[in-house]
Length: 67
Length: 431
Image 1 (cartoon, rainbow over the protein chains, first blue to last red):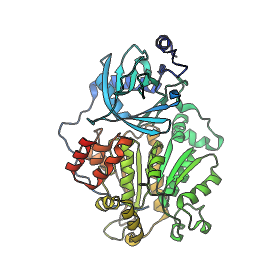
Image 2: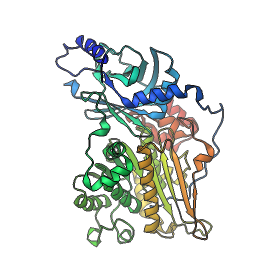
Image 3: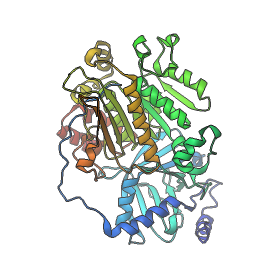
Image 4: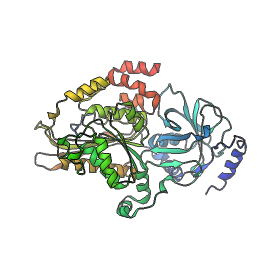
């Protein structure tokens, strides 16, 4: 799953291997991030924007407060 | 050894989406966002915040096709997070020296409540590490295995362990939740037994509610870890316990505890679910239920408010005032309690949690349910009428001043709660 990414990771780690065995930052693949980026790309031109300066109406207190 | 430290990035999903949207077409684009910090021993939670100018450190988020770990880190850059193609990513943390430490996990706060691991587990999803137990096979089928696993791995903090709180606790444990922290300073009295969890008996009278509940639940759910804090939510022990949780629930009997819980949720960028019921003495008002799910950027003040906000702020002025208030409180302000109403409220609350983790609830949500004069149920979602698009409600003192500030924001809370807007601004500029 990592494919070419392991190349980048290994190359990066080579310069850090002398750190007394301490853990190193490594590359991971996050399916969630991939899905998020895909959905953003699809929605980029459909973003609903809130008009500047629009304010919310004053909140009405909820009457319920007991356990 | 320094490498023992565990680093988790806490990123509100809505904020991440907006940040990535701005960078979607820009390879090698870098965005910088303020970072708060919650530090518990070796555990470090780095809290990404949308906007405050005096941030001592920042997240540097880089869109790049070249995922190469840095050999040196600038101290002001608290966390470097590199996002490549197809979900490839790499995170590094600057901590005490210019040598980077690995970022281990990222919690995406919002729909799904996903936790992604970047450490040695590599590409493994943190969502899929639990088997579907036989007794819960129907629950797992209903929610989906992945959503169920995410839900039961969340560490819940429950503020208030009385009628609603005890029912929520049982519901969470029944779902298979592994860890709950209970916070409540009160002791069990006879009048609680009528509507609290049925496992409590007269033999528990006089015990702290949290301890009595933990003992009876431990018998039924021995695999669950139940932490108890028999103190007010404002106590430092409660703060230390709750900031380790992933999800806060307030089921309190007074707005002061709700307000304190709301501040904690904002400081540490945690979802907050508030459950309240009421059978008012005033005949003009009807029995009903309020369930509010506040994701980072919204809070109880800006989502429906608190009916006794001024009194709540006054109660939180000092521990002594809080104790005196509880001892002298007029408990007859409510007409009574009904376990049936508590069950409705807590059932709706748990459904909201399930739907958030299953990604059906996508934003902060406020549900009000009321029984009208004919006994018919009326439901309302007030936010749907208003819209709730912004990441932060800039008009709200809690959201605008506290969101994502972490431990360093705790000293700001008294100024936020007890003083006027100008003094809040002054406190922020001098912190």
